[in-house]
Image (cartoon, rainbow, N blue to C red; front, side):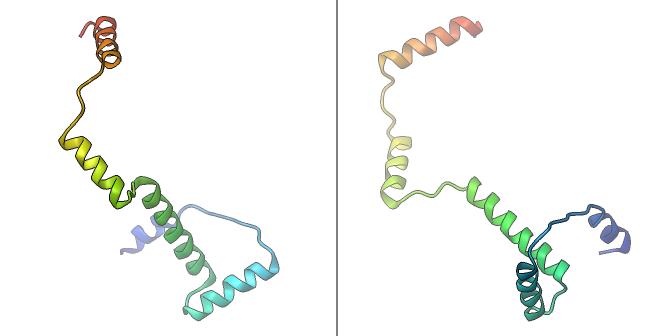
Length: 96
């Protein structure tokens, strides 16, 4: 990374107040990884953020649910009377 890219990547500030014990815990963990406290906190928060985003964007199904989903895609049920009526109302309202 060039110096300019590094400077641009770190142009925002993030602050947090923590207890002395919590800071000591973070500092000890950072030392064990051979990182500065700032680098440790940034890497930890980054990893947590990526994990949360991935978890919320991924649907996990049991084997039975996965089979049921695949079956529904491969062999969809015929639309019932209410669904057909809803489609007709939608088409009428939208002029489609």
